[in-house]
Amino acid sequence: MINKKSIEEVGKSKYKEFTIPLYDSYCFSNIFGSIKHLFDIPSNKKLPKDTLGNSKDSTSKIVFFLVDAFGWCFYEKYKKSSSFLREIEEGGIVSKLTSQFPSTTTAHVTTALSGEPVYEHGLYEWFYYEPEADDIITAFLFKEARKKGIETLKNRNIEPKSFLPEKSFFKDLLENEIKSTVYQPCFINDSTYSSIMCKDATVKGYHEYEDLFESLSVDLTKNNDKEYYYVYLPEIDAIAHEKGNCSEEFKEAMEKLLKHMDKFYEKDIFELSFIGVHGGASKNEMEIPLLFYRF
Image (cartoon, rainbow, N blue to C red):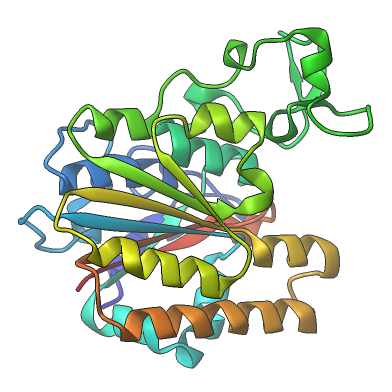
């Protein structure tokens, strides 16, 4: 079902033509408090109850897909071509959320890994001024923005913990005996950012979607322990930056991802799935879908 109340509330949260983040209710940053809630862990920051329906029972496994750049407009455009998305709308709950501001990858991935909203963790853009370095840096690459190469901040003996968030969402879960696994592309797994932000989780890389979903399927069926899976899917975002989100290349990448998600869904192997997403920087992409489904 479509959560009409969420659409109404997001629709009212406007300044002229711009969408204002609903940090106290329908916002990306509150997803992680709701995940804790589903694991029976108390949390003050949660999504409204209507995003989860009448889910009173705790669950053993949660999968959170962060599909970078997949805004509400793309959900509406592609849902008819995906059996997975159609099934979630028919048997689960689809809610409209606001992105945080700014609606950047840096802000949202850091929120997903730390559990903190952007106004607390402070990493809001790809390039930003960092007082610890007294320079404009790229936190994801642990580098000075105006220098070539990556990890250049290592040459200045700057401790990454001095500006990366201390808080860890995975640590919060681990303290409640819930293990976490992070799935993300292999090329970012050994970075300083990933090493710090994912230190309380098991990190697994993937090269292709086939690798990812095959490994994830094995993980989900190996036991009945309480476990959390964070899956980062950045491909469509990268193509949108290079070719544009109206390009044929973007359409092909979107169809490729949904094809693999459809196959994964058809195995019907896990109890509960979140699909979390965030949009890009335009005013229309401040509105994002949250898809909740219990298998």
